[in-house]
Amino acid sequence: MANSKSDSQNLLPLTPAVFHVLLALAGGELHGYAIMQEVALHTDGQIKMGPGTLYGTVKRLLEARLIEESDERPDPQLDDDRRRYYRLTGVGEEAVRAEAQRYAQIVELARGKKLIRKPA
Amino acid sequence: MANDFNHRALTVSQQIYRALLRAYPRGHREEYGPAMAHLFRDQCREAWSEARGWGLTRLWLRTVPDVVNTSVAEQLAAFNPRKSMSDKMSALFRPLTSPSSAFFTAFIAVFLLVLGTSILITFILPESYASTAKIRVESDDAKGASGAGSKLYDPYFIQTEFEVLQSQLVLNPVIQRLNLQVNWGKRYYNGEKLKTAEVLVLLKGRLRLTPVRNTSIIEITVYSEDRHEAAELANAIAESYRDYRAKAHAELVSKGMAALLQQFAEQETELRQLQARTEDFRQKFKIASDAVAIQASAEQPYWELKQQLEQRLDLQRLLTAKIDAAKLDAQMPRTLVQIIDTAEPGRAPVRPNKPLDIMIGAVAGGGLGLLAGAASALFSARFGGRGRKPVAAG
Image (spheres, rainbow over the protein chains, first blue to last red):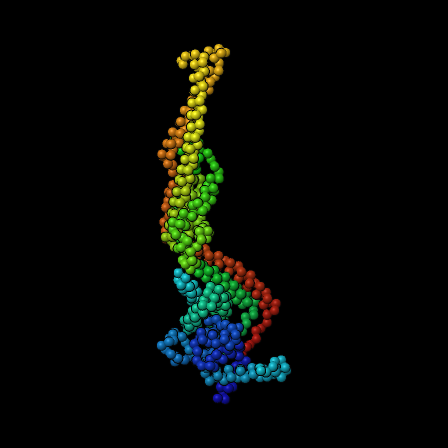
């Protein structure tokens, strides 16, 4: 655990694209199109990942073992078996958690400087 | 038909995207190509359902730069395999700031964008078939069957007939005969019956008239997405024009005949009166009917009247001859318009011209790509630095 935490700390800061993909997978395993939709939803449509960016990111996240491919299907009857599902690994979860924490600290810092207010 | 069109637009987009996947290294393509194609298919459907053609265009405007950026990054990564996580991550996200790579990226992006757009438009555009009917036309002034009349050269004859061919006089019977108001209303306006004027505009837009040089032959070409309809329309227009000219000529002959007959009748009346007056004078001067003219002052009025009578009789004979000639013309109808080639359904679509459109797209893309590449390289050389590393070194 200590090692994985150390590994994840070394990866920070994550790029927005990587962070958003990991954040999307934090809710559970998803296929490529669902990741893309989730990212678009989280960013109010500001980030619309193309297939090249998405699968380039996925490839590198797989190589870095931040995510892994899942063999399970939520409902094999309803789902297209050509879809590939991905989920976070332990290291990936640590990384996204650490990055979120880093963002939270930045937000706190900004609040301390009265740049932003707490939501009502 | 609309569903076919939708299906084609989406299918063609997916085919183009699958072709673009060849820009990626083989390993990446084999591993992720099917998933990327599948994701793009989902994006196409979503884009189409959101805003149809415009949605698809916006998707392509996002996708082409995505393909360019990531395929270049993957190719570079394939040439320089990195071991560490941070190197792999940064390889994907590091901005390409050297002038040569900036030029290359901008050139490829603009080239593919323009080429892809031209390919997309070319394949999305509905296919159109052309059918041509050929007619030989003759002016009404040309020499008739009876040999009467004179052949006058009219330099504006063909241009005038082009206007006649596109006029309501010729096209309205075609619209009525082929029931285009209903048929095109069903096809293009959800079953709403069109006005004749609306169909006329559509029909004129599909019609092209071409003179064959140094002949009196006109080619009537009609374009339609249905190859049988194109031929049917071209033939119908040729027949309608032929019928119109025949009817117009018959009216012309009929009016000419009426004028001649009226003139004949007037001449006949005057001739009778003149004959009666001449006879009165002959009896008054007691001149024999077979007497020859004598220059006697007392009988002079009689001889003058007789001369007038003979002139009138000559005129009457001339009118009779003209009437006979006109009757002969009417009995032997002239072929002012002859359909020399009927239109046949085309075998292959003539529009869009795919090779030409794609070539224009490639040339335009290359030109614009060079400009964009040069601008990008210049910008990079002036303001570019080493890219930031988004992920900390491991």
